[in-house]
Image 1: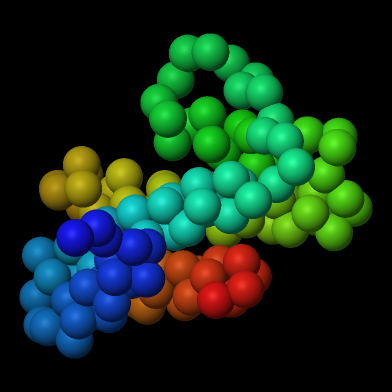
Image 2: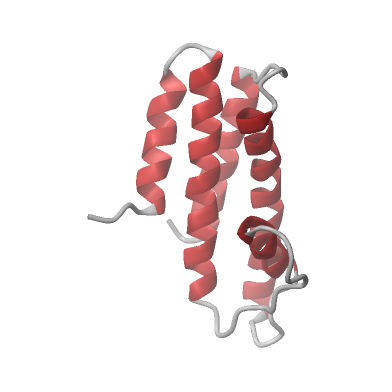
Length: 128
């Protein structure tokens, strides 16, 4: 059985109901990974992927680079959406990094709600 981006988003929603910062951090992380995988799936439907701007860097950064500068064979609508997805995913990634790695910094419910709202906006933009 495989997991789909929407499944990860459902887990993020379920985690967001619980009280406590550890749950909030986990919800932020799951929402980011749901969005990351949704962007990969969206990108696979493009006529051609943009080349990675830099060869070095994580798969996450390479995806952000490609979304920011989509291939010229994409339609205007696809290019605009790609840039919008870049912006939404970049913001979510920053919150995910804070949630996963900066455990000495507080993570608020407000940040978690913003993460989930951005993830849901990203999914809607992708047609879900």
